[in-house]
Each structure stands twice: as structure tokens, then as C-alpha cells.
Image (cartoon, rainbow, N blue to C red; front, side, top):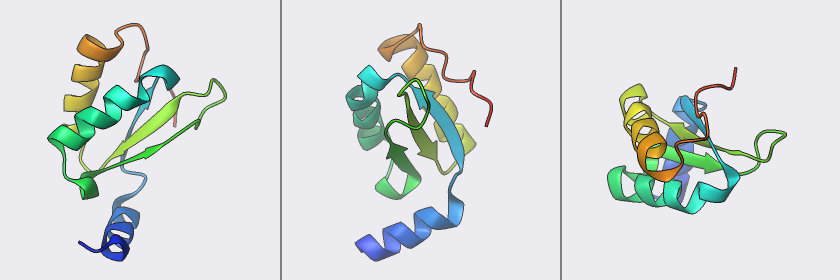
Length: 86
């Protein structure tokens, strides 16, 4: 995919399925996404909430659930990724 194709494809499914993450664990979260997903299946935005937490966007609900399970067991079990009301 060209960068333009990638941009257009992501815009077709955004905002998709979202998971909020702690601002200190963004590198670990992005590394998981890079290892387990194709680039067109996820997106990341920094400081999306007043507490400076970040948001990871997923094309599919299944991939979001895989990520949240990994995040809650391995990266940061104390941060509630599901508590935010969209």
C-alpha cells in the first residue's frame, strides 16, 4: 500500500474499535501492534484524554480484544482500558 492508500483505507474504518492506554506504555503497545497486525489494521493517537492517556484504534473488534488481553496481563494490569465512555 502506498501512504495515500493507507491513509484512505484507515479513514474508511476510523474510529473503529478503541482501547485507551496509559501514557507511559505507548512504546510497548505500539510494538505489540507492529508485531501482530498489519499497518492498515491499527492506528495510534497520543494524549487523547484529559489524563494524557493515549488511544489505539483497531479495524476489528477481535484484534482489539487480543490487544486488550495482552495489555491487561503483560503491559499494565492497573490501567483500565475499557472504562472510558466514547
